[in-house]
Image: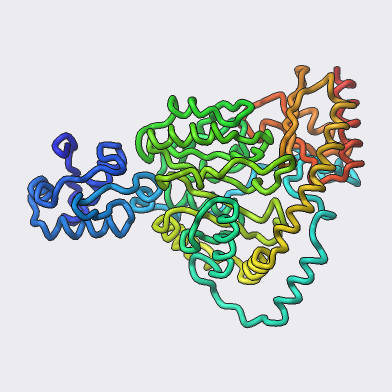
Length: 479
């Protein structure tokens, strides 16, 4: 097994580092899969012409990284081969692209100040309406915290421990068991993606993702020198079979997915599709980023188990956030994954911003641990149910002959697919001049597409209907 692989002989590496790199390459290529026994210390020493103490040093380092484990009676076993491997082999030039990459502006943002309408109905807004914000409860939380407030210092690298414990408990109630030590608090999901791209992935890597996808509206992975590869979707979510055709062996590819109430389509990935996806990722040794920030916005029934909870091999990094459920102003999200990976990301975060806001972390911890958060979610779901019903009624009244759409079972997004051959960019600009702000589908595909992402979570029910009525008039006037 070992004789087939060429030994790297970089002159700048120490002997034990050469051994480590060789083992990592064998794991990354799939030559040594998870659960396999690696060659004995004696064989490795002979292969590299070094003494056994050098081999022992290399193996101890790899065990500390979480890649290997000594098992009584079995020898040294490979125990991980995706995110943990990436954390053990981080890019050396992450500082070159460690700046936050923001979403691309809507074409409406290109309109001059003179043309801006006095009032905008924002069907583009990816957040909840202000009247859903729990003002009274937030005031109570802030007052309780103020009574026992102490001077702030920098939090520990992974974040405020009581918040990580509260998130651990909360995820456990959802069926996803994650220890507080395996959670990193970040300043929103966007920073989580930025840390992953800068600290774990190498230039030239391929990011597999749904097409369309929110990720196309960001520069996070592209600015880090990675390529996006869109995969098709159906009513059950990402078509898992397409992964096999696109994924490359080892950590040269990763998968990014939004399985719950996908942005922008609103699709909920079925449980069977989730299991199929994980089976393929296991076979392909494909690391997965599960962006699950919409999970708690279910309307009809709770979604299937998280990919993280179904993953037995450490392939999934989980991203959660309070931005879509409570308020984006807190700027609190989290990443859950293998300890070694979280340690690596925490180190980079501390070098980037010295940690997320202490006050925001205190507030978030109080919301979860007090039970207020789950009470608030029940209210949010009832509000979204009313808004969804009104939105679908408006669409049926004004757009049934002009477009198609699916009924979302959660979240607040509808993917409107236009039937006629319409210049969506022109439609978007005309709608803007009429006081309606939209997000054209091209933002989520990187290319022209006959689709618009609508949000019914921010504008009022009355405003949503007004906007759809105006949209119909614009389309008919142009045809």
